[in-house]
Amino acid sequence: MSTSTSSGAKDQVARLLTLVPYLHAHGQVRLDDAARALGIEPDQLLGDLKVLLMCGLPGGYPDDLIDVDLDALEGPEADGVIRVSNADYLARPLKLTPTEATAIIVALRALRSSASEQTREVVDRALAKLEAAAAGGSAAPRIDPGEESPERLDQARLEDDLQDAVGRRRQVRLTYFVPSRDEQSERTVDPRGVVTAHGFRYLDAWCHLAEAPRLFRLDRIRAATVLDQPIETAPEGPRDLSDGLFTRASDTMPVTLALDPEARWIVEYYPVEAVRRRRGGRLEVDLLIADERWLQRLLLRLAPHARVISPPELQVRFLEQARTTLSLYA
Image (cartoon, rainbow, N blue to C red):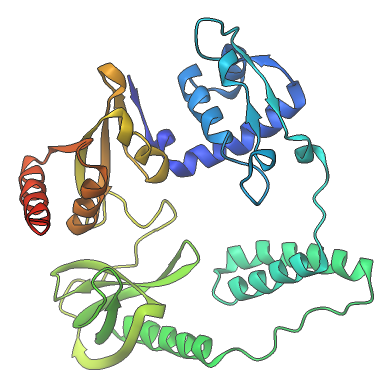
């Protein structure tokens, strides 16, 4: 059976946000009936309920977590009825303490300064409601965010310089910090525009060092110099990142993995393109990767319960890396 990206972590969160109020409204309901009402397969719903077991109030102790009766859903004595308990607090209106409300307001104001026009409208509406509620409980005035920090002002000036380079079609020399390698690199790029994804601002540009399009997080750019040299690539607009940082149009590589049951958890933690069920609880998973080193680290974590099916040369390189790693323990 094949499933699409609905098996990904992002879509599972959306399903859980729908599942919890549905169960609260309907009480005890049969697994098949709930799956039909929610538009998913019973097996998928059962998997979501197992994740729901790990959700609850802060603390993570047994009494803090939602309880799902899995014995009623699996095994010879199962009657197929969903029974959820220790979730009564979900029916109570959310009440924020002054400290919690203040923290959210400050975070929203920080988000607003780098948000797009459309997002800023949503943030403003949320701020208005929070500040009105906070002021209604006391004589507390509206929170003054004060002057912008030098770091944020520097990022704003950086973005202005980059947008100017885009408009004049001039190359930019970057000093960029790469966290995965803990190093700084010097590179020359043809800028295409500044975009937002997951709360961060990125420069979308053609990188002459990588000879490919790249995204550079603005807060990781240590220095940027706009050059007199005109761009060498054809002018293009920035990419649409509304579906995430990595799409098939980006510089990514499709990879297919075979996963044993012990490694199935990755489909709930990483965005995947497709999942196919195999015998013995195994999965065959398609995903996009932007960095082979990230995949090698993931495979080392999963070993021996995962292998690369396609492209086969990645499996060969992983085995070489695994042998090198094991030799260090000799």
